[in-house]
Image (cartoon, rainbow, N blue to C red; front, side, top):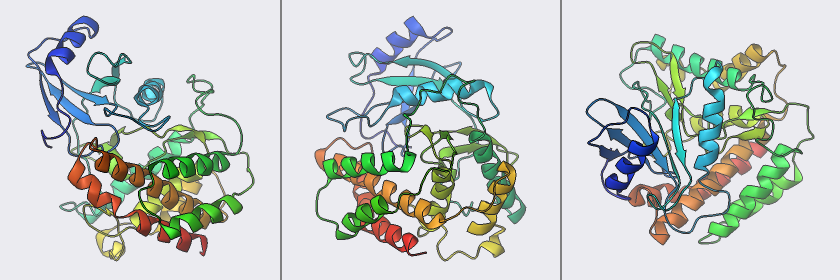
Length: 342
């Protein structure tokens, strides 16, 4: 964690929580999490309780980005389902309180694996954690969106057509220099969007192991975090998001498994993970998985281009890390093109 960028007005937060959060008693301290490039996130501590506050960043933002209200809504709706989420306490949409909208949720005490190789764990634990990640993904895609009140959480129509269009516009709005591979990728994805196959589920939008909290003494997932990109869409986007991360380089920026001897670490292959997911959902093999994987690389390239633009504009959550991550835009674009080629 770090206390650097985007300090929080603790007096304003305390006053608001005293008035709106039952049982809240100060004094309050806040520590900013080092992650959370999109929406700055803080650990709030009082003598009796701990909370987490997640806010929109200040400054001029891209349209529809940093939707903390959507994050709050989807997690609150999932509270009674088999999908593990943190308890939502309150949402404040009044920018006047701290300068931007925010929500407060419970602090889930557990393990977070920033590195998918899970250093320090034995092979049995690694395999069990990944299997639980797979289990939770299948449960997420089985949620009855009507029953939980999320039937209007995403517009109708072809999800990938909508997403390619949206993220192409977001990318162009935050473009800082020409990236020929990204131009080609946008063109190819637009041309190869698959026909709808009838699957329409709740999707997380950024499903990765580092967006999950696990029990400290077991492989059980306690909460899935970072729901900013969630919507109603196609489940294979989430499945491909997992595989996309694994194909990236090892290290704090790539956070992937490229070059890793997975068998030696007890980790499944891409194919094994996909097959287990399909088994859990009663589905056949995924046709043209290369498209879904390519889409995931494309969307992440567009997202990190936005992170880079915010760093250059001076309102990134973690400027130094944002500048490093931003250098990966051409890498993601090239990998997206390679995925389309199989």
